Image (cartoon, rainbow, N blue to C red; front, side, top):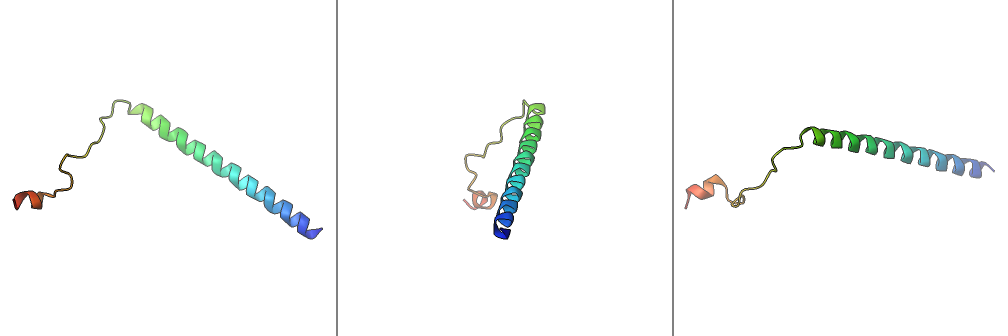
Length: 61
């Protein structure tokens, strides 16, 4: 009987922790989406075509 009570308690605790984690993730996602909506016309960040070459390598040519 004690094992069944402990098992059910652990199951309930796991489900509660999962629900709380999902809630936090939804809040984080919502705040990220709101921040993105405020900066709607932000230019995209792109790497330069020669991004693997460092300025030192370019000077040593």
